[in-house]
Length: 539
Ligand SMILES: Nc1nc2c(c(=O)[nH]1)N[C@H]1C(S)=C(S)[C@@H](COP(=O)(O)O)O[C@H]1N2
Ligand SMILES: [Mo]
Image 1: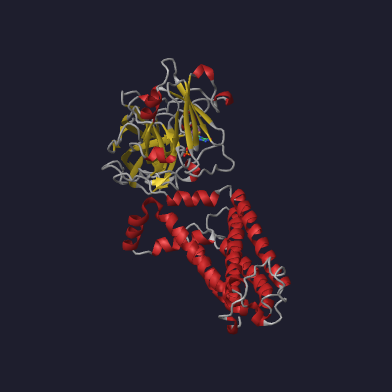
Image 2: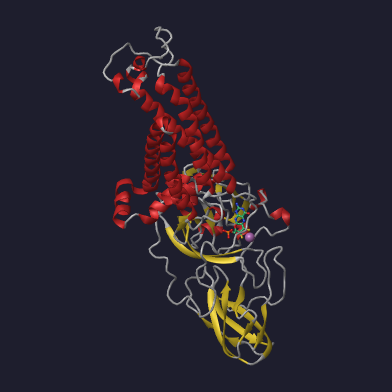
């Protein structure tokens, strides 16, 4: 801009008004001297607007690409995540002290703010020298790309949204610098000014539309992933396994969220923002309840180890996992709603239409059935029901463990059929006593071999486990400590293993001394039975 413009005063014109006041169309640079309408400051703000719009266009396109790729790593998330990993603890504490549970939101807003200020700066530079603005953009994009590529959940393509966002921003920045260049020499040129306005409007509207598309394509995935990361939920006092629950060699007592089996009918996982989540408890109740996620967090929170099991688990299968669940007792909520005397069930419903029918008695007794929002100290993973699911100790998942929960109707079993009932599965699904050999699974060296595994009979408890070799006498295994009757129990047995091919079998007894059913039965209609049998080659 022409510095000679400074200090002159003329009647203010606007982009729409210049013709009306009869200004010549800016062939003389001095004619551009009119406050915010033209002149150097006008060049700055137009450049800044161009830079900001270029960045927003890039971010919008980046969100579409992230949605298409199914990654949460938009440029802002990538930079923000890298930042979180690197902030010193005192700064993290300060952020939490200042912003509380909104610290992650504050960080996102902060990063976006800094990004847009730098983008504005790039835009101002680009008016005169495109390459200078481009250089600033390239540095920012480089940061985002590196941040994204080095995330643990980056995969092969995590950097792509940031890369495409950068290319888009550079392209749009070039469009703006082209448009604004003529205005350097002719600040008042109506065609150029109109061109700038049209470009700005076009980019703004386009970015908004593309950003909306990004949300739809991503099925809200990125937004939900961010919201999930941003939650600060009540933490369990400890994540440590209770003392003595782990037997030598057996599968880990706690199943990590990443390793936890996943069973559901959801082709694409429902994406629910905690801020959108609502639960209605209605039907045969005195008072209907409606709860938001915040309402839930304001209530008394319980943390409880529960072993979840799928009815489809074959003997010896791995559709079973043990986690520390955090949530709110269903008993409290249901009692608040006041179930009718003749109600005997709830029908819980998922966002995706899945339903489960659960006996009211199992929700009102002392087993601490809950609305869970956290799993092993983390917000529920999205595929495990984020933001809220049901966990009922002692029942198979298909009759109880509704993920992406949105609705609970207090009712009677003779008034509805839950999802799996007309599909050949029993209305009631208490978990069956069972046991599994985890090691060895196929071979071992001769000598002392640890045979170990898990046994479970949730909400009844396991009192004894026995192992036999080649159909010989049953031998008593050592049980690890029992955390509660609602979790699996580890066991181990030391075997002096001779060379050759052998057959190992295991059986468990429940808390009342009943042995598990030895006759083989398939999972349908209400859970498999039979003894886990493993062929091992020694030597
Ligand atoms: N919304 C919904 N919730 C659901 C299901 C489902 O298909 N949809 N499957 C149930 C079944 S059969 C089981 S065994 C458990 C499994 O929970 P997980 O995937 O967290 O292990 O979720 C239950 N909750
Ligand atoms: Mo299941």
